[in-house]
Image (cartoon, rainbow, N blue to C red):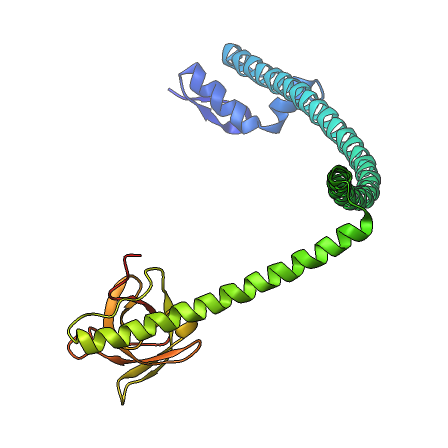
Length: 307
């Protein structure tokens, strides 16, 4: 069953549906009625319970929205204040950091300048120290040289004093000592000459004895001095002979055999064919060449004498 309402609108028997439809139809009038600007018309047989529920719901919704807005504003304002404080703090910290950085740069530049100056001073000091060390080494060298000279001079003085004491002990005068010294020098010279003549005669005797042995004992070896040593001066591979740096003065004899070696290894055997004062010529003995003879090879007697 439908009833006539405001403006000829029909409404259902359900009062809740009737209230919702009327609230929607009224629209702005109901909202303005909640704020007190529009007075709702008095309706006959209107469902005031549904209307009041709608009105209360709208009021609650408006209050909730206002509360939510206030809460959101408070929260957002708090966050804005916090962010503003953080920004200001960070800005102050940044300014402080920039100030400290500038101060640090200045300090660093000053320190770098001082370091450069200190390094220069250190280099100068090291140069001076090296100069002092060099001068000290030179002074020590001079001191050592002077000590050596002093030692030698002292030794010479002591020797001179000893000689003087020996001279005094002889009881000879200076002219007598000079005359005796002259005789001593002449005697020494005569002894040297006699020694050289003895050596020459000894070599000649050995040579003559070698020749006699060749005649009397052709198969007998020629012996050479045991300590005789020489070096190959030249080599003629075409004619198989070598030149040695030892001769008659060193005791080399004709037909004396010598072993040629290099680094302790035997290279060949040669036999002397010609003897001069300080050199000799030797020929290669067939069958004894174990390698090529070169200049600088060592030679020693193959048959050294036992005496």
